[in-house]
Image (cartoon, rainbow, N blue to C red; front, side, top):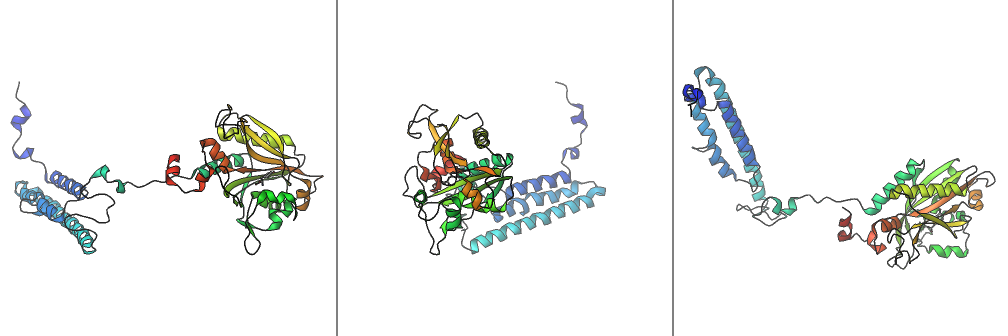
Length: 368
Ligand code: DAH
């Protein structure tokens, strides 16, 4: 093999790295040592860099080999490196001292605050991994529902947490003593206010303050005096919709809700309407969709009926319009009350509604 011409010609000194390159390498090495895990003690760092045989000390001895005209520049570079290295060491030793003084670390490296066993490294130190949380499924589902209705032109309002008898019942065509009050077994505060039993409690406020055309959605946390079981919970989230204009018909209601369902599940969802009863709508209706848990084969969730009631709704009762100052001969409208809990349960096939408000991390971690 022919000998390389260049190696023949190269002088001994030409192969030595320049002072600048040396300084750069030492800096790089020291920076990586400063971040080493487990940490290197200041004493060790001092020996490695500033001791008699230390990297900085040895680099300073190289100055003699530098060409005389470049010596002063190289000298400055080396001095700056030394000062910088010393500064880094004293910073590290201060931190070490603070940790020793405060008793959170001992000089054998044991740190009582470390959330991992001593002498473990890298990924074995689970405590160092940030625990990333996620949004609650009720939040994700609620936000998604809100975005869909907003895209259809509805405006979002937040419900009150506490309201009075008038708004919760009377203005909704449920006078005192009306048997339908039993549908909303309610908590009362000592001064006769009610943690809202349904978001319909906001209807009168909306209808009497917004000029038609009215397209509002109201989201709120509702409370009922329930004996809880797998399908009943005393606390739940609801989204109320209110639509009022001239010549509003039942097909507008059905179109709105079926469009929502299709957008929510991302495909055409089978639905049907059946009669129900709520004093503030006439007729009272129930909007049902195909059971998504069993794919309409029949299961305990749909009580083997293949359909699931998801949205109680109906055309707003003339008495409710009148009570809000709207003339029922001129205006008509519809309203609905959608439970977020139901949507989550249907989407995720959850067997017990109480899990949603339990704060149980084992349950919630499944929604990552
Ligand atoms: N407020 C009713 C409840 O929580 C649900 C409801 C039914 C709301 C019919 C409506 C409606 O707006 O039209 O039980």
